[in-house]
Image (tube, rainbow over the protein chains, first blue to last red):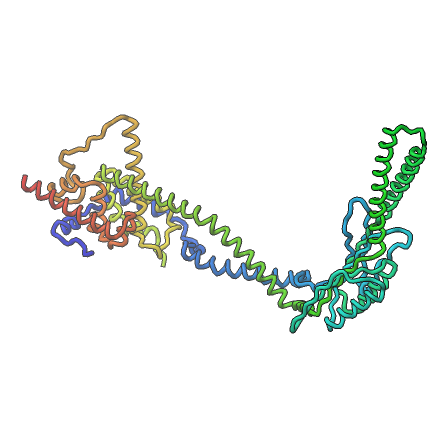
Length: 345
Length: 165
C-alpha cells in the first residue's frame, strides 16, 4: 500500500503536534532514572520454536526409553514366549461323583518308559488309559498294536486309520484284561515316542458291593416267599398275591444279576485309547538371542508409547481445539469491544 | 545493539505524544497518557526485544494499551456518575491536533472517531509501514489499509464540507 501522499496528509505531517517542554522535561526526568539494562535472557520460546524443539526431543526420549527398557528387560527376564511343548504326562481321571477317582501324575522319566499305574488286584476298578504316540511307520505300528492287544487277550473296539503322503494318524480303542493292562501299556509305549498319556481309574467296588447286598436281600426275600407259598392252608387270594410278589422278586433278581455281571465284566477289562501319529512335532522355536529379545522388548515399549500417544491425542486434541476456540472467541470479543470503544469517542 | 531507554525517549517522545493526541483528541489527556506510557515503558524496558519490533512500535503499543485503559475507566466513571456524555460538537480548541493546523482540518479531525484518527496518526504522522501499523492495531494489513482509506476519505469530506459551508 502506498502511503497517503495528498496535500492534506502533508499538511497533517507539517502541523504534527509536539510534546510540550514540560512533558519533555517530565519524561526525561523519568528516563534519567535509567532502568536496569536488559539482562541476557534465554531466547524467548515461541510456539513454533518450542514445537520444533519438543517434537524431536520427545521422539528421542521415547526411543531412548524403549531402547533402555528393551536392553534391561531382555537382560533381566528371559523370554516367556514360544516355550517348547513339554512332554508332560498327565493322569486325568474321568470324574464320577459316586465313585472315587484315582488320578495319577507321571514324571517324564517314567513316561518315557511307559510306566502306568497298576490296577488293584483286590478291588474292582474301571481302568481307562489314553496314549498318544508319535511313530515312524504308522502302518506297521498300528498292526503291531493290534497284535499286542490280541496277545494280551484283549480285543479291539474300534480302529480309525488314515495315512497321507507326509503324515497320518490311527486311533485305536482296545480292551485289555485288567490284569495285563500295565504290561500292555508298557508294550504300547514302546511303539513310538510318547506325546501324552492319561490314566483314569474309577473304583467301582462300592457299586458291586451294594448290588451284592441287594441280591442277597432279594434271594432271602424269595426264599421267604417260597416258604409261605409251601403252606397248604394258605388262602387262594393270598397265594395269588404272594405268587405275584415272588415273580416280581425273581425278575428283579435276574436284572440285578445281569447288571452285576456287566459291571464286573467292565471292570475286568481296561479300555486303552491309542492315538498313533506319524506327524512330526513342530520344531520348537529357537530361543531368541539377547539382541532379538531386546528388540522385542523395545518394540513392545514403543507400541505402548504409541498407544498412550494416540490416547492423549484422542483426548487432548478436542480439548485443545476447544481451548483455542474459546481463546479465539475471547480475543475477537475484546477486539470488537475495543473497536466499539474507539468508534464511540 | 540495545538502545538505551533515554535515547528511546528522546527519539520517540514526539511520536508517542502525537499518536496519543490523535487517539484521544485531547491535548491535556494526551500529555498525561504520554507520561504514563513512558513510566510503564521504563518499568518494562528490560522486556523489550528489538528483534520483535522497533522501539517506536513497542512504545506505541504501550501507549495504545494505556489509552484504552483510560477510555474504559472514563466510560465506567461516566456510567457510575450517570453523566451522559454528549460529544461536544463545538469548535475544538485551537491547536489540538497540531501547531498551525487550519480550524477546518481541526474540526474535521475532531469529527472522526478515535479509531479513525488512530490509523491516520500511525500511517501518516508516524509514517509506520502497513504491517507494523496492522500488528499494533491487532488487525490484518488489508483491514488497516481499508480503515486508513476510509478515514482519509472521511477527513477530506469533512474538510470539503466545512469549506463549502
